[in-house]
Image (cartoon, rainbow, N blue to C red):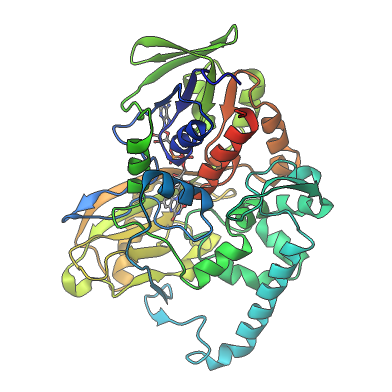
Length: 453
Ligand SMILES: Cc1cc2nc3c(=O)[nH]c(=O)nc-3n(C[C@H](O)[C@H](O)[C@H](O)COP(=O)(O)OP(=O)(O)OC[C@H]3O[C@@H](n4cnc5c(N)ncnc54)[C@H](O)[C@@H]3O)c2cc1C
């Protein structure tokens, strides 16, 4: 493609800003990032309180976040945040030690069985499901893999593997099929409590591409990255370094694609581009763009999680010792309850505690926001860490995905085949997974595939 191609990128979250960075690395400098908000970072959102930043959105990374590492290098920053730690409570607020054999001698046979299944899952992922962990979903429904390995060098890999079709199954069924049901007790912590839905509804592909074996072990061993000034600061630093900073407060009124050009009406002015990269939610693309029938057909199938975060103050005597996970509240029966609450700054009780809750499930009515909020505040009392004041609230459009039927029917291959068709490329969470690294990595791959050297 011509290096002077005029490229519009919608959204200045990790996907959009990374697209800018990888385009620059390939020598494309004629790009414009349009962001509707007055700040960059999207769901990496780190407000300031009492002189320090806390997290309302993304919290952490792991050492296999290679794309985020590219961003850190490019922007001249590093992961310099507080070390996270956690404990566990039951739904009645009692501290428990589910994984500690010394404190739970009766559980030893169960823990040994679980450990064996974790090892077994690790082995089948490398053999039976070879290729499961490449970024994105191209080919999976057809029993193929095609992408880049999750290694620092991200070697190009591709191949045929019929077993990969199993990844369309809900994770519950995938585990039952492979006799590794107990592994869910490990995988659920960084999955459901992080807002990614329940194992009886979400295809295994999403679970395992994000929580590949290596990443899960990093969570187990608390080998995590955080940023002192919050995850938002990663993207602020990147935006500062980009040749073309994101244009904030851009209200996109219209997108019209005709005669090989893309016309975008931004804040009342029509701008002309050659290509468009959409990183904003595709589900809402039709609200401002000349969406085509095939685009609409696929984008209407996307669902997302209703994931709420709330930052609260407590009285010093009520401040939790550490962050807590409440596994009993991570089941579909207890949706709308407090699943986890984070204490980010362990040296300071004047910092907020942030709560996390999911209030939807595919087969159940959505719980209204205010109802879930009240439940969470009640749960904090049950946990003996009552809130004295709510200081911030977020109800996120979270983790867009498709369900098993559409995944198995080849949703991803069909949408991938549409890349570039209307001078438009699709990136952002739906195309890979809803985390910082997968979205950033997908943008890298998109640039590799379509914006050649
Ligand atoms: C509570 C929470 C916890 C999380 N924890 C983690 C974590 O620990 N680790 C991790 O890796 N990830 C985590 N994530 C997920 C991570 O933040 C997202 O996956 C990532 O930010 C997705 O990047 P994106 O660019 O695709 O989308 P977004 O971050 O959603 O960015 C999209 C951008 O597009 C803009 N936009 C939308 N519509 C328009 C429009 N019409 N015009 C112009 N601009 C538009 C938005 O304002 C936004 O800036 C968490 C997210 C949340 C909410």
